[in-house]
Length: 222
Image (cartoon, rainbow, N blue to C red):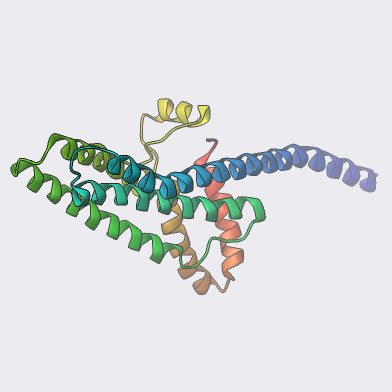
């Protein structure tokens, strides 16, 4: 009787766990495909945007203020490259389950600081150009590229501005709040994991696995 009851409970537990496991695997597959797509798009724009616009400007009949146009454009490509690098790391994490590298917080905090400096320089260049009678074409390109760089920086490091799935849009309508970007969460998460793993005697892989389970639950569906 006890054996039968135990077997019955085991079957019940297995039947309840199996759908959850299938959902998690399906969710990881979706996230993996999404990160692969975002990584490819951001890497493509990061590499192709600068030479494409440079060739276009070379074909123009008027003179080009290369420094004025180049500073914000390089910033855009630079920040998109950061997104591509992070997308590759997350794709590997979802596809093959390795922990995020220990160098991630230091590197991306360095990126964040360099972005802030670069955006400040570009803003100063805009202010100077506006007072010196710079041709409208050069000012126009500067005004087109600089806001895009600012928005990309905010989207990666401060507030998520891109909501490209139905789940993300539903959550935005429900909470009426901009989410913290996953990159910003991972910067803090990996930093805390490094400290917490050493204190609790865990390996980084063990701490990362436990934290990722909590992170997936906290983020909810995209």
